[in-house]
Every structure is written in structure tokens, then in C-alpha cells.
Image (cartoon, rainbow, N blue to C red; front, side):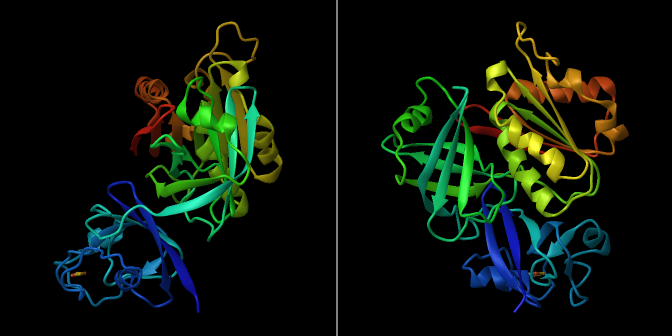
Length: 341
Ligand code: FES
């Protein structure tokens, strides 16, 4: 029987995936998965189950009343989960916390498959997930418990969803808890993860995309590029990958490979360091090709440190460029600080 993958994104950044059978209502499918979405009547009368469908196709039928959901609301993407029958995979934003819905972060275990150091600047950590491949939206992250430290660190998946082998791109920090552990990590060692988390993920692609990556903020874009390639996307995608030092430019071969694999993909690299001989020096904002901004008809995604987010925001303000949407994730080496659209 056909069923669809429904991502429920809660207000606290937790995402849970449920399977919704063809013809089944989202509220019922969630209940089957022991997730109590907000509801009162389950009859299309009260409006308590109102959520926002961020992507996917579905039917709402006509068994609900205007007081519960107006036609304008339905037009704008709001849905009643007690009426909504998906006809494709969907992403639904739920306006409450995962805890309020009696669910929470998903925990899973994985074993170390490979640890690869790149230029002594970053490390690719590859893990093998023993159970089912984790479901996530391209761009989301997981918290990885650092063994023996009682602490966790947050890293975006750099692989596409649905793979048993998952990987993360980790900035090497002298004295860092994760960096220190990775130096001694051994193949087959078990790690505990929680996730997926975060509202920085690839939305429906209806126009050109501009990806701005700062340092290891490249990771979520690798996941997105793989998904776009799988979907055979034809939309123009331009990635600007900015780093501090030449040494910090890692996985460029992997990016380069997408120029052959993904139609209409281009990229450039930018190095900030004054002494660098790199052909493009400075900040990503100094190297934004006008065509990549497409007169504002573009969805911009940025993952990088706070000053980069601020610089790009300023750039848009100063140049008067108003992208159709601007999604960003601010992070420091230890944590995701802010996600916004
Ligand atoms: Fe009342 Fe859906 S639960 S309208």
C-alpha cells in the first residue's frame, strides 16, 4: 500500500517523521505513531489542529467549516491535520513543541566507519547506522554525544537522507571536545545521536537557489546538492563557499563533481585571509554574481558563523536586493545558535 513520509517540524526544532497511508488523515497517522498532535474535535470544526504545510501535495476535502479554516488560510498553506490527506511526502510545521505532543527527539546509535582529516582544518566523520537509516530533511543536524565527556556537539548531516552511511563535516579545534575525541576514535566505536533537528532545510525548489557556506557550514549544502541531484533538479544553483584560510577549503573535489552531476550548478570559493594568493579574496558578499541573485527572484540559504550572517543581511539591505526568501543557520564550532527564515 502506498504511504507517504510526513515530516512534522515542531516549534522546538525537533522533527519527527511518520508514515501516512494513502487516504489516511495526518492526525490519525500521527496518533498511530504515538504523536498527539493538537486536536479537539477531529471533525473540522474547532481549528485546534491547524498547522502549516510547507511542502507536498494533499487534499483537505470539504468536510470542515470556515470557522476552523478559511479559504484564504487554506490558500496560504494552512491545513487542518484532522482533514488533511497527503498525496505525496509532506513537511508540516506544527505550532507547538514536541513535548506538548508527547514526543521528543529521536535517539539512535551509529558506529564509527571512518575518520578523515582534511588539511588539518576539518574532519569528515563517517558513521554506519545499525538500525533503519535516519530520516531527516536535507540541511538538518543531529546532536552527537562525545563519548566520556557528558557533552554533545551539533553537526549538520553532509550526506543525503536515507543512507545507512551518514557523515558530518567537523571543524578541527585545538583542545576541542569533539576534535580531541576524534583523534583517538576507533573504527566500530559506538556513538549516540539525537535528531534530526533544526528548521534550516531545503524547501520546495521553485526558483534559482543561492547557497552561501561559511567554513564547515558547507555540510548542509552537500546534503542538499545530493538531494537536488537525485531529483534531477533543473533550477540554477550557485554555491559560494567562503573560508578564512586557504587550508580551510576542504571537499572542493566533491563540490566540483556536482558541476557534472547536477544541471545548472556552479560554485566559487572565497578566502578571507589577506595574505592568500586565492583569486577571490575577502568575503562572500564581495563575490556575489548578479546573475546568481536573479533580480531577487532567488531563494537564499546561508550556513555560517554569526558575522557572515550579519554581513549578508547588511549586503541585502545596502544593495536593496530582496531575495524571495532568506533561510539561515548561525553556528559556532560548538552549537547551532539561531535558525531563521
Ligand atoms: Fe478540530 Fe481539526 S481537531 S478542526
